Image (cartoon, rainbow, N blue to C red; front, side, top):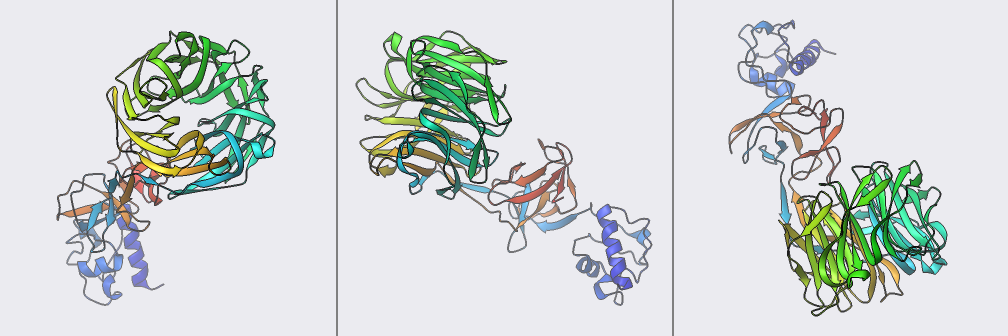
Length: 542
């Protein structure tokens, strides 16, 4: 290695470390631009070092002790294209300017082409998103295979979904399937009623596009129906609500605890001492409550909700609250975490026979409701709802006159409004359910397609689409201050430590998101930002 190259590397190291005062450089050593033989200039040094090191870097006599105006380690100067704030993630543009990482939102929904996941008669279809494996898991009764309980893993890509190989988890007739994801243990939990005599649950582990299971556990010996499983993320428990066939079809709930590939249960609790159907459970993470909605046979078929509080392996309930003083069908519910609200949808069976929705607000152990809203002024069936956390919207799927449709709802206060609906397929549909894939920012609906031999079918739906100016190559670092358009901006690049962040997780890799924010989860495109050393400091691409 030549002396000039060696000294160049020494100077680079010293500059990145922010310390050149003790380095022994001569004037000849600093003539880096011409291999140690030309005139000593700041421009030549910049060229050799590959970074902007400021003006007056080289003193007249070349002495390291006289180097001045050195920047912070790992920084460079660029002209800003647009306004930059301190701590903004930044890309380099084709013309050499820099801009903040930004995302453009298009609120026009996009629907993919339906995809068959089971080419056989399928029933009691349920779906959940596994945020650990970033996969969709569908559980169903495979009528084409002796009504066995079966599960399959799907991978969303763009506006479509592909599936792995189906796996049987119960080699006996399995009905009233419901599936939930336990994010504390990264496990899928499937519950079903077996041959009209036992209700069971099983723990599944997703690996790639396959799923394996532990042993099934019996938690009820009744011919239970309308099972609905949900995960309580505060207490790290699975809560299953159902109509208890062994106890007058009373509304009942039970708490499950996952450990490894096993699940155990506490004692069952009655939340309604009346016959109930269309049971739908959701978890309110703002108030740490499980909200169960249903049709109450003992009270004129009214739409009713009960609020449950999990403690240990049990759950308790306060008085039930009516949300609709008329008969309700196809009751489904979700939680809007942006607004801290429960949203319930159903099919009205009174005139007019509309698709209806209402917003609920939990307070302690009770719930109150805003004004009822119509999402479809026509008779609907197979209503389902899920929450799109990216768009902060609820997405309702339903069937109207043998046409499968989806519609986006926006919660504001205690009210909800709707955009225009979108058709995804025509035909006879039943057993509609949906889940939100937060990695790909898509809703996946699953259903039994009566117009295609009752095959198990799925469709991908985007309630909004987005584009970003970031690619896998153009991210360069973080703005080291606030700069106006066309100003010269100092950008912290590789090796620098940015201290203008908030909410980072120390010791974790962080990735730039489409909108320029940072997360421990990669987005699309996947761009590594750096490693956090504290809640406010990030080593750029470190």
